[in-house]
Length: 114
Image (cartoon, rainbow, N blue to C red; front, side, top):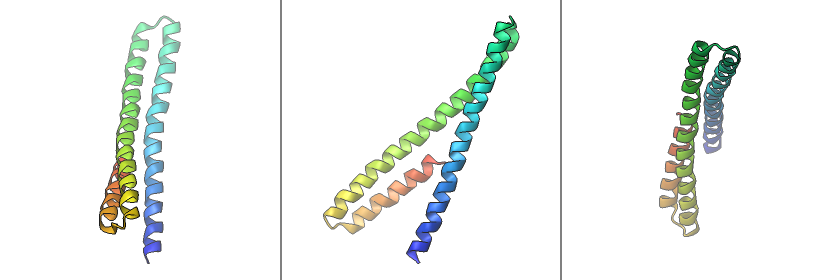
């Protein structure tokens, strides 16, 4: 039964990772698209359109940057907790090790927006 629960959890995590990646990729793609439009308009001497697309590109670039940073912070915390869990498990402290793995999973979920 536990293996089935773990399989379901892993599927949910994989789905969450793909949706987080898609959100970040969407912002990155939008930032690239608007930056390309800004460049094209700038080359044609259209400063007003360059400004419009550069500002929109910046919004998407900042959103992608923020998503990457938040995910990184939470995954770093998850790694710390997993290392602690390993250390406690080596000492036979299953209860404390379990607390650390639970905390690691919480941070992993937060890294993918769940």
